[in-house]
Length: 131
Image (cartoon, rainbow, N blue to C red; front, top):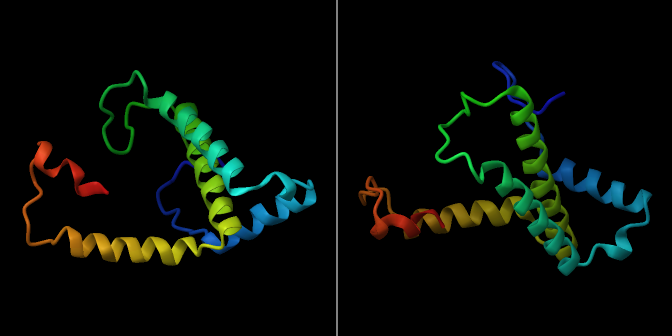
């Protein structure tokens, strides 16, 4: 299992499953004592740094990463997973339902950035639309 998406591979994993696996993982190692919101956030920021390093000198990269080697994609998947797992654990420790919060944020963004507006340019006036 490399984590690199293959044709016909559409099996999804729920946030609930990841949350449970992370909670079990921490409990089995007696790590709950270290999993404060601050510590988890700082660990996640470190992982975002590692993720950033992968792209640091590559310039613009096309969707699907067609020029990347398989081992580069596997490494990217590992770093993306580190960020996701810390985010899931942080949301659990903070008592936030990450799935519901994300859906709410999508709805708020749909109101803020109406589909009827033209966001088709790549200039400074539309740079804030992603967030």
